[in-house]
Image (cartoon, rainbow, N blue to C red; front, side, top):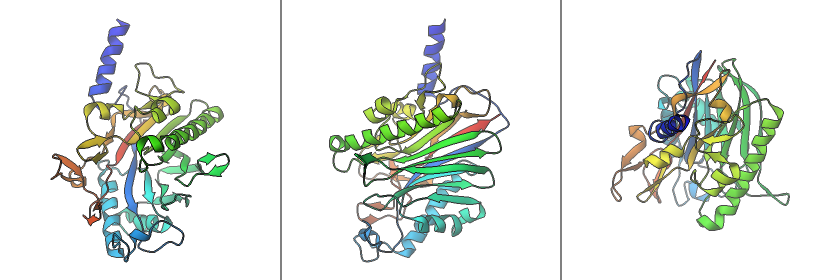
Length: 343
């Protein structure tokens, strides 16, 4: 009987929206992650790898194009979770605080009380991770940026952002924002760097679990790996959801997307799931505080974020550039959203 029940539950997890136990609570809120694809200003940052994103650079990047991109990003955020905007927006591929201030002040997002958390990273291209939180709903406790280190030398890539806060006066939530090293130099050649990022993240998650009793943890990011790759499934230890989630284990809510053939970015004809949501088991079996809402984890595939794929068929993300050809779209990645309830 127990075996039959577990098999039925696993079937639901694989073929239904990735969710677990239906719970009701006092309310809910959403968290968005979005790789915004090269959100650069139009100035030449000295010592930064941003020359192509200047008026005289290869992409002929201008303030007018930046303005359009900022409006596009704000449109994505505003429409991502229905009538209620995300209380936390995690971002990657942002160049600096200036573009973030433009985003929260000079677009329709200005009507919301978003506060910026950002730090310049050691990344060679000058792109960073960042977090916006709505100060009307979120009380911040603290944040920290963790670099990747090899023998005490800082790797020139994005840092991992850790944020903790109380949302709607309920519980404490711990959020990690990631943008792991890319596959640009080759999948196998670059794999050790992503494995390093996984070890750093695992260490920091274990540190939170050692300091807090049964902490509620959400891990978001563009991992440049799929859920089944070694960095995530073995080193980080993020597994598919089981029928009996353990509070201290990590579970990857994005696994069903791979199995159903959808993705967050497309290379030629192939969709991949690089953008993922991973949570602690304490969010899957909670009777107090935060819990993941049934059907609340999804890829945000709004119609205006996609366009017809003339070359490979179907649809693809409506991005800012296709190669060096300006399209004026949104991003080469689709956003992902997780909805949490609270008791």
